[in-house]
Amino acid sequence: MTRALVFDSGVGGLTIADALRKAAPDWLVDYAADSGFFPYGVKSDEELRERLPRLCAALVDHAKPDVLVIACNTASTLSLVDIRERVKVPVVGTVPAIKPAAEQTKTGVIGILATPGTVRRAYLDDLERQFAVGKTVIRRGSAGLVDIAERAVRGQAIDQEQVAYAVKPMFDPPDGPRIDIVVLACTHFPLIREAIAAACPPGVRLIDTGEAVARQAVRVAPQTRRPEGEAIAYVTGGTANKAAMTPAFARFGYAQIEVIDV
Ligand code: DGL
Image (cartoon, rainbow, N blue to C red):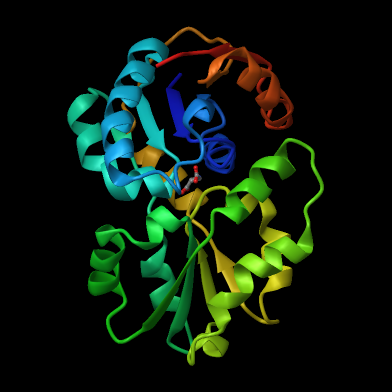
């Protein structure tokens, strides 16, 4: 049995953990939420660069996975290389699905909905240069949507007006009304997919990376034979965060929750 560790700043990576469980039903999929340092999307690059490799190394040391999945675009687009250098297991990242969006758009205009951190990354410029030549890409960063998703999974109602306030400006630039595909480039966003879809003009399609990341994890994970056990959810930031995260973890099938402090 293969043991995976899926990691994000909060609840967003649970969408990837779900996709991984579907792709590899016999795996144990552990989860780690860096709730003590949430949200990543408004942190400086320096802060994240300092924390992410160190945190991932500590998590891998503790949880001993066969594969580490960075289920966070904000972290992957900044620190994937540094994390790979620090840990000894295969590391799978999550990056915006620009390639499939560029292949599938009919109008030639795609929207990227992400955190404020992800939209300013050089990594995104590279993806566009590589995969979206001749296409128009409109980026929209929102920390508010991350917050709405985080609270929704913990059981709070979604305020559709706030979602619209965050999403609508993506369609304001001259080419905005021609957007036919929006890339959900933050793993929190599939958790409020219906609300985001309702804030977009009719006919706009939303795509995310959950299944692609899960497939990649299955491809790179070494085959191991390990004793069976229960999947564990780890959380940083002390027992208050454990209590706050328990409903979200429960919804995704995690009963065993451990506080880990880094
Ligand atoms: N879920 C993360 C992502 O995919 C970021 C959320 C946050 O701002 O912490 O980018």
